[in-house]
Structures are given as C-alpha cells and as structure tokens.
Image 1 (cartoon, rainbow, N blue to C red):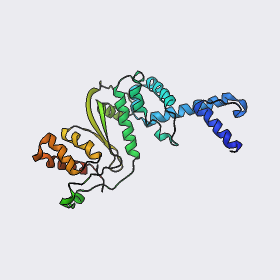
Image 2: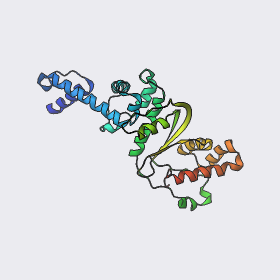
Image 3: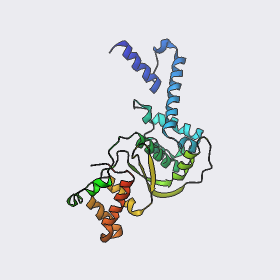
Image 4: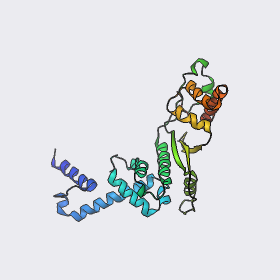
Length: 254
C-alpha cells in the first residue's frame, strides 16, 4: 500500500471516526477539527433533506439531538448521502427518550417510504386489456406483480393529516392537531413520475393487499377473502381490489 493511500485512509478515519490524528495535516489539528465539524454538519443537513417534513414537525432542537445520536449509532456507510437515514425510524422506535411523540416514528416511516418510492425502478404498468386477455385457466395460479416502488406500511398513528398540512404549508408553521392513535396500513407507490400514497381504509383491501404483495396467488387471495365475506363473494371481492389496483397503476406487467 503506497504512502498516499495510507494517508488518505488515515485522514478519513480521523474525520469520520475521530481516530487518532497523529501526523495528519502537518500536526495542524485545528484544521482537522474543521473537517470533522463540516462532515457532521453535512450529514445532519442530508438527514434533514432526506426526512422531509419530520424536522419541522419535531422542531430544530429535538431533531438535531436525534440526528447526532443517530450519526453516532449509524455512521454513514453508503457512497451517496441520499441514503443516509435509512434506519432512522427503527432507531427512533428504540430510543423513545429522543422522540417527543411516538407518532414521529410513523411520520419518519412515511417520509422514508415516499423518498424510496421516488427513486425506485420503473416497470411497465399492467393494463386492463392485458388482464382481460388472460386465459381463465391461468387465473388460479396468477401471482400479481406490483410496481417496484410499492410499499405497504403498518402504522400505529394517523400521521397522514399532519404530513399533508406540513407539506402544503411550505415555509409556514401550521397548527397541527394531536395525531390519533390507530392501527392501519399506508400504501405508497409511484406509477409514473409522481409519488402517491393513500391510507388503506377498506377492511377487505387491508386483508388482501399485504398477502398479494407477499406473493399469494389469485386462488389464495380468494380463500383469504372468503374468511371475511364468505365463499360466494370472495372472487368478486378480489376482482374488485384488482380493478382498483390496475386503475391506480399499482400493478406491473408479468
């Protein structure tokens, strides 16, 4: 290993991990401290950008404290700072003392899902005509393919109204109502160029959607629907959900 590469690795360790800095920058450690502070500040700024409205909801002081603790526990390891913060929601759930309200954990989950959906790969959208042309004998074993961007999140708090209010307020600070507790699913996807989300309110869809995204076949979805609506209405319930997912651009061609 040549001397230059060793020095570069030594400098990186000193900036990122606060490793011993002997012999670096000709002993001018105040310069090294500037690099260290700039590195930390840049990562905190990236965390703010990556988490959207969460910093505004929490407030600067609380979010900065959370960000510093997260940086210590999860140093950046990806070449792009776009992905810094991928484990923040999980970290928040494990560190409740750093989170002023438990609903902020779900808000972080929602924000990260939206950002991830925006960057997800594209796939040809399944059309109604393609479904109509499918041979009847192929339906029972048919496994729906969802857009790569599609995610379904189990949430414990109804944070969607707060997210919408903060998103619409731009630089203003809207008055936010106390989030309501409530177990539900949030669906996030990007059918074309615009990221979308909606709460899953229908009980039958909440039953079918996670199973469909996990690879259950059409016949298995019908069996699942029969538990709630009965065998006579099961196929119609699944087809109804299928029509909605096609209309929303949620499904991809096989």
